[in-house]
Length: 360
Image (cartoon, rainbow, N blue to C red; front, side, top):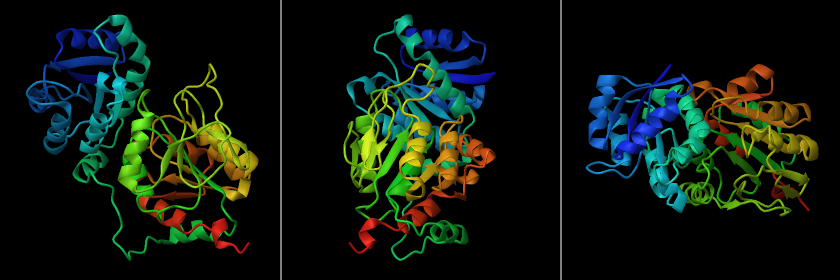
């Protein structure tokens, strides 16, 4: 059973969250706190596997509490806050910068029915967080800004050379799939690419409903790259393109974007599998697929399809992952040509051949 500490200034919310989490027998609530000032002591006393915490609380908010926990007694933290409903995502992203694993939008009000609606996502996020690499979390918390290579540093290793040597083709698009732990890694990769980066990047990041627009703005501010929300049928142009809420992100042709609707059986929407499979279908060796940190197997089969179509594929290295789940499945399927750290991925992508470099 996963041991959970609940931190919320509303006793009603705490009790409802306790009911919701303990209903399926996978979780046990080992402690409750009414504000952030109690968290460090309770973490030491209760030894939870994961903490679920509100942001807005008296005495100490969830952001500062996250900083203190990660510096004194590190444990995975999931932020659950209703602020996201108003697109006030800055607080959630600041919590992630402080070391939180993820953020889930909590419905306003304390109605049991409303909280039950988020129960599946909350359970998934807590299960993922409980598996997180705590040493990686503390590293993220210590370095809230993206790790950017010093000017003149050569981000090139033997593994990168193998990646670049395979790609004599002109690359028309790059697909990236990330889940839990993705935001910090994406900052590290995209922040080290040339600005502006000339190859279109189609990005699937599993993220809470109501978070996408603010996440895109945050990612642009952190990396210096243009980030936008993809639209149906748009031309494939340079920039980082996110899927809108409740839609997948894929290609309709070699040069046009498609936003498929969610199917009943889909666990994730957006999902990495439709993205990578569309790159395989329309671009093959002219595409690159990148599978990053996250729990589960999303993207792994699509990455295999891209590799079999002649595209180059890379997974994030185990030691750099917050959760070695999705990359591990891709590795086990034989879908990955390369396993690289975030900085090495940035170095390799920076050296891909683009149409701009080819005489017209």
